[in-house]
Length: 279
Image (cartoon, rainbow, N blue to C red; front, top):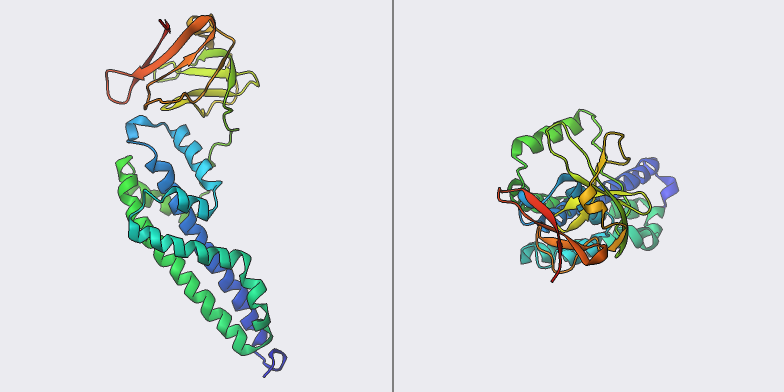
């Protein structure tokens, strides 16, 4: 029996397209969940990381394909989850790159359409089940960073209500070498004065656990003041992510053989900095 002789053919075709979209959506949910694990797992604890740094890591993770995320999680996920993820990557690649080419002939008959629906339903359930397992695993990681069940549920309720999520930061990636031209002090309402670093292309950065990191500031405010101590040794070409650094423990080489050092502070979650000449 051919497709064109069946009265329900048009509805079945619509269902095939809808089921394909649902299967792909479930694979995207899995992808995003894995990206969050990758972003948070690379930090030792919540005291070592800032919110802009987390957003930088999330943007980097979201730029990876599911296969690339899988490779990055090889030594992080439990073996049983990683094996399931390997299979999920194969299924996702088939769905994205081969499904329509290899199954399009089935759309010419009712039997073929129902076969496609069954296959897409299996893929949807497979992605959804693995996403749930990965989500249960990731909750413990998120709790380590202070994200409680109440906070997660509140965010979910806001999404359900239609409130759009806050967009992630969007900044360029750091180069292997940056030319630092100014360092500013930005006084905040809480009394702190974080250092804001300006590079030659007028991009702004702040200190993070591994060197220069993203900041929410996108322009220099009129009340900012130059840090005279550091400014005396600028401009300088620096390595923004120093090698062999530890969380909040690294240094930048400025001009005149002077070094800007960063070290953990005496209080948990704090840091200190200073200038010295290397012996």
